[in-house]
Length: 297
Image (cartoon, rainbow, N blue to C red; front, side, top):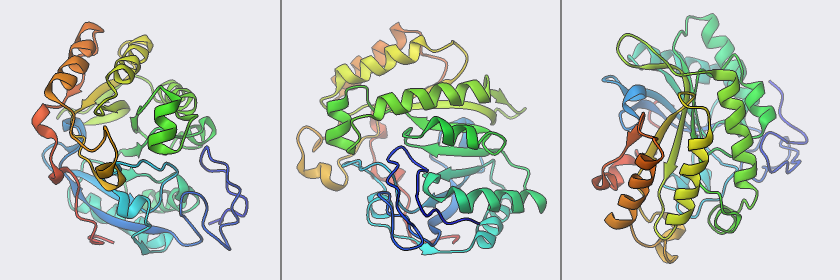
């Protein structure tokens, strides 16, 4: 396992010597995990009836002011563990009946995660690996994960650089994300399901509709509609809740209105983005955020 001494794992390319200090993402020399458990609130083709074997990693290369996982992404909550322990966690989730191994915000820890996957596979791990990402990934990182990741579960948050700068401190978000998404689709191919409808291979593109950002949501949907049909699964989400710093920021200090979300849904339908998922407006509930209490770590 190699600890980066000039870290360029994420698009920030902050160059941190992580043997001595944390990078922009908050990740330092020790792997940190906040939770590892069966998760039932992903898309149905991932959670199924037994749950997705979800591992939440500490730190993040984005600075989303509304992050529902802010205590682990921004404040670094988590427990330091070894690569060997991570490999055993993957096997324990498989033994619990997980449909897949779901890696949440793992990029800053790839020098630990990839050896752990190799070790777990050598010991019998056979589940598909889901890479759950905010979409802010380099093309090089996506290519590095070929052969490791079966399913990409990626956000497409914004097109407008003013929004991505204000809300996530990433003015280059769409430029980076759009290139990464195209690479994900190119190397993963069309969705493949098992006999129970559980996704084994493919790309899910999520978009969380934000209050006051209707035009940007519609622009994202138009961009998605230009991607090859059948190459990904669209997932439109209404569950925005004013977490973290957003509670004090207009217009993010409220949930999305029924009218706003209806306009987003209508646009998706008009564009033919119906072969996927659309959350009900009532999905905006805090229960979608699991407790970060080191379960399974």
